Image 1 (cartoon, rainbow, N blue to C red):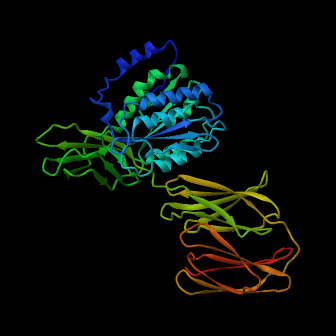
Image 2: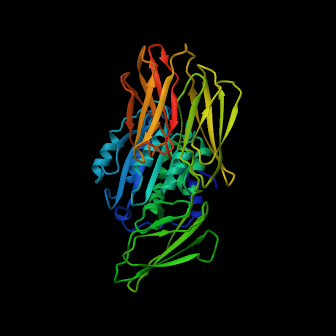
Length: 483
């Protein structure tokens, strides 16, 4: 499909194409009460947008939402500005009537700065999370310096958000085409800013199609399940819902459910990963004839990317790297590649699937290393994350810790005792992994300390104690707690 580009002199042609290529849009009798949903406007407010362009975008936004009833049970509108740092101009629950919305739009000041769209999308994901109504992200942008937006937009889509885009004609169209929600012909517009008014009606119609009150949508999609949600139109006395679904293209229903009239959600289970399904919901009543509602959705792959990679216990010639989450049922092995920056030889360590850390040794003191941890999955796919690790400068030999003993008190409490050379001692540095995290917890203890009790210790955690002297840190001792 081609993205629709609207330029001066092309308005008549565009209108004729609209008339010939799609069915007339049947709007509700009253637009003001047609819909229920959340619309978050992502407004490019960076320095690449001219002041005139910015004001035209605001005017377009004001006209676009003017017919809607606002507030809970109708349409909630929020606006998030994109700049060097995202700024939430107003949230979804701020405006419940048009006068306050229009006044806020008039008073918005452009941020300038760089275009940090990725940071703004992270905020948008939080704002639109777990809302029980259809959700729309309307992105108004000049399309310049978009950055890495595909992954955060994919996360938004996974939580049921429809992404619609309006871009000025000098944007990066290829990226916008990849991230917009289908269909492109009604959800993605490239328009000369002087003619942006001519897309007000078609864009409003596109939003209405998504947030129209009687609509079936998929929420909380995972690799093996999906929750379908709709606005109830029946009562317990007047009918029931007939729901069936199948893989897209399959004419035979894989499963069918008869649901009571008060239902508004249903969970589909035992689905296949990375598979597109079509679901159909028909309200059945002897009082009124209802349309069959449809929705398509694609289940996730079932593979989680590495969420965190961290380095700790660094010395002049070694450092430990840890990662998570562990997925032993899905991961075949981990590979850890590391080399000095910028051009050191790359070395590789192979780690089995149930291990979440390894010690890198024979490193050069005072050197920065790039460490990349890759999860190699059993289905052949691969996910990787990189982190920088700095070794300590080589120092004069300092007294090492003399002894370290661990005693398990309960399943997550450990008594730690140690001995060290007291002359010139400035304290101790203790490090261990807390239960429920993949991060190493570190703390300083005074020189008079010879023992401490740790709580919330993860099973098989490495507990390390190092002596600190005036000229540096002495060699520590590490022990592993019981599983």
